[in-house]
Length: 267
Image 1 (tube, rainbow, N blue to C red):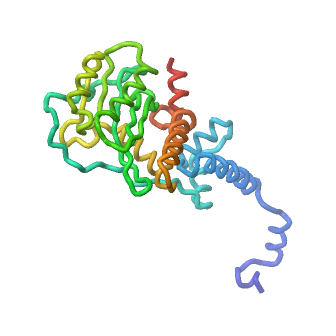
Image 2 (tube, rainbow, N blue to C red; image 1 turned 45 degrees about the vertical axis):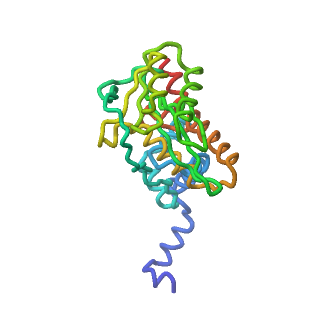
Image 3 (cartoon, rainbow, N blue to C red; image 1 turned 180 degrees about the horizontal axis):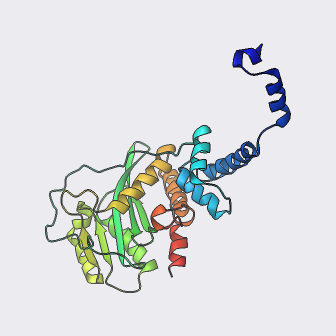
């Protein structure tokens, strides 16, 4: 009766049953297991291009379109969220601080750093996370978490990063026009160390695209997927994510390497 319903002959059905799954179908099953393993290892944040690259680095031969098809068939969709933007206007912008890096390209580490601050909600209170990236490698070189968004926060993260990474002056540091960066104390410290301060142009939203991208990834991949009762839990999550971001997360902008791999490879 079922053969009549589906328009299949009895002979055709018996032949298909005896033949068993095709080699391609069996390979799809194996690949799906590999895809699910990689997808689980990164907590579901990779789409098909990064899954494909991760498998290629493991020596698994498969096309990106096949990975995309298998992820689609198995409902494996990378988590994503809208980019967070701070819409608070700052009227204390110092017009004398220009965008000094708009036409510069980093050719090595510790030439251009970029920084920003974002808001994190925990235990009915805001916490403020300041982060600095090396623009060349996309590596997080420093971060600090505080109850207050002020110059102390941004100076603390810069000083600690500088002690670990910087051997000479001349670094360009770029940020948005937040009050914690235009504070006279912050400007004076950078100048005394021989660093060149740079800021977003007024009305240009992508002047600090690397930091926008980092906070987008951080919130979509980790922060929005977790609940925090205490600041200690929040801090532990940041530690875990920064380690993952620097040591394990593949970045398409640097040839599908991790920031630490990229720095090691490029010397």
